[in-house]
Image 1 (cartoon, rainbow, N blue to C red):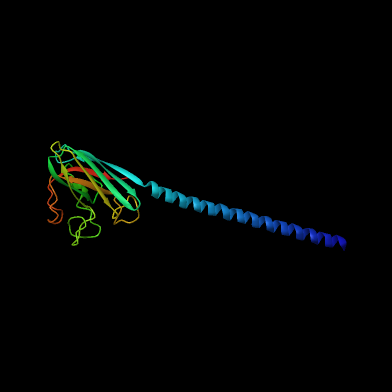
Image 2: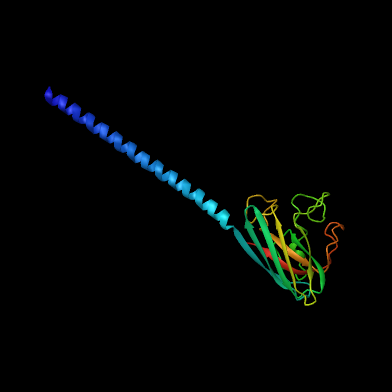
Length: 200
């Protein structure tokens, strides 16, 4: 009888120990998962703090000699565009984001029309009556044909899931003349003298 009792006590002790070990392992697994999730959140926060940068090399079009770069930086929910060009004729030149990341044609028309995901009329950025998401505006070239421009908006993003904001997959076009902000559908800015493909 004592042997049976001792055996039962032994089995009970083993069972209790095993349960404690299982609970300890489960707690460790839970802690590891929580640490992993915290790490993912920290990484996401770091990515947002560090931001994203994308530089587009522009190609001369329409027989022009217009060269340049357009850099996009995303930080704190905004995208800043910095454009730097040479080879332009002196004066104002329209710059827009167009539908397609395609600069294959000699005239730049393979980039399509203005990027307009909200189906609005063409106009000056911020106009009450509407404007395209790609309606950036005009930049001014000096006597040496050089022009720079900076533009910042919270209506764009670099590689996000919102197709009405994501600039990836579109083109950027510089025109021979200025945008009049009135003529439909593109501002009567003249021929396309430079084209860039916005890709990752």
